[in-house]
Length: 151
Image 1 (cartoon, rainbow, N blue to C red):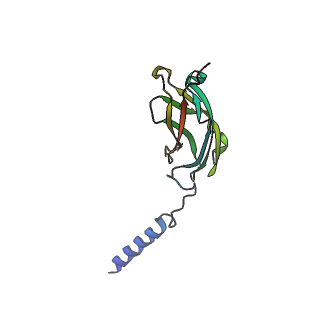
Image 2 (cartoon, rainbow, N blue to C red):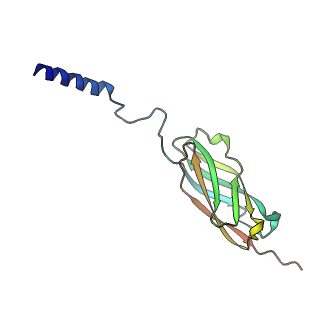
């Protein structure tokens, strides 16, 4: 019985001294969380078909939150095959911030080979962090308008 109590005492001591941090906190901050984006505003929201040879620059601003402080990329994707978009640059001043606002230019290219017709083109913007976690999706419409008739 004495041996049993000694083994039990040693086991308990190991559990207490070798166990992890009880409160689950991570000194590096929370890990594994996705960034969140909100309040997306982009202008202009439309152009005539063919203006700028099918390419246009749109100024955008989006608010973000990122508990991990590792926001890395803003992604732009058209939901129809006609357009492509890319964020010009994610400002360096958002690194190591848990919240803020990103402003920058998105360059839209409407594929000339497909002769994109006048229509609404929904596009989505998401954010990705360095651990490849993807944010919520925000959707806006970009309108290619009929060319104005020449007289």
